[in-house]
Image (cartoon, rainbow, N blue to C red):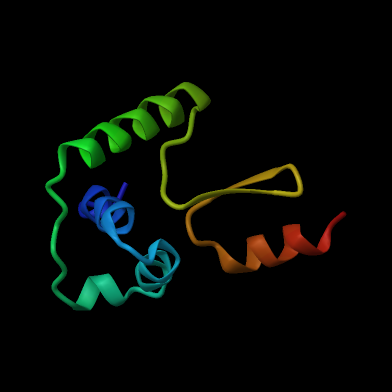
Length: 87
């Protein structure tokens, strides 16, 4: 997992516009800009719940997608595109 992944997840969870925050993270914008790291206890709890659930499912990377029944680890756009075309 990326060294800053957990802080980025917290940023997304705390954002009023989670879709926009997710888009920023996926486009690498959080890599080159400063952003406020969320320190809300309920967000820490939510991250812990997600980490526990992903561990039980054997997921150990971010992002992780299931597209048309195929699991894809990381932001592998060609693999995601290929999975989307298969039905």
